[in-house]
Length: 387
Image (spheres, one colour):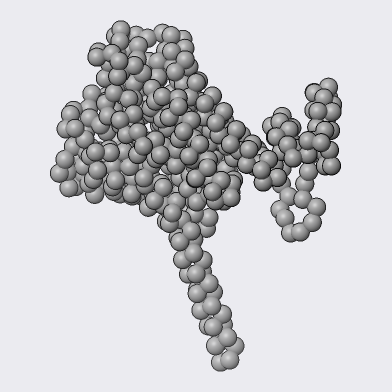
């Protein structure tokens, strides 16, 4: 490792201050910080000094995503081979088919996103942030498996440019960039993002393969032919990384135990989703309303969105009470949009983006309520002293 350290230091010399390639320093420094922890700390001012930096936080989220990603790769191949040939499917056959389909999407997502990040870092003269490490992996995991690669690239470019850099870059965006990418793809290319032929590999090319999801079946008035175990384990059609609630919960445990993800937002969203599902179960006017409330929580993108995107510390609520309110409303709107809009039987993307917009307002009123409560306590204490 010392040899590599010395080589990188030599490589960085022409990019130093006052040197020929000074303007390109953020690009070479990005390689350094990717391989090693940052070699600088705060020197003055009131700062909390901790070993956990942005890079470690982002890497922790990536690690939490890995179980769902690996299963998503396997399930991509499994859904295709099982429907095509029937019977049992060998793990490696399914995994290799899934890898052949999913890996190019990941490469395009990271390639386009990081290229734009590098350009803006050089243009603005600041270091490349590690925020896209997570976004670059989230985007492929919430996309249909057969979406054209150029659409992925265009969606990522829109998310980085409009959803992130337009607001000032990492830490300044008001919307979750990965969801901005999905929203762009959904509204710009709806036939590639919805329907019963996009959620299973090659379903649009082979008549024997159906890509209809559970929520799509319910919206169309069809019966659901998957067991609750299949729904929970993830052996169902859907976006690449969203199907396995079991492995998403593994990722949630990692985020909660490391303190990276807010358990208040996660539990709040489950409470909000469960209450909304129960209310619809009492009404029961259609198949989506009659669908058991607990099954609403384990199908579609609900679990994935709640764990990995609603908890985004930049676009979510920041106050303790605000996180509970934000989480409950996320769950509430996710299920409400899912049930009331049969043309789009999901709701998670729109529910989270809606609450991203209102998160600052929630925090504002929570803080104002705290200020008023303290003022009342202060006034009461002064009256006691006077008495």
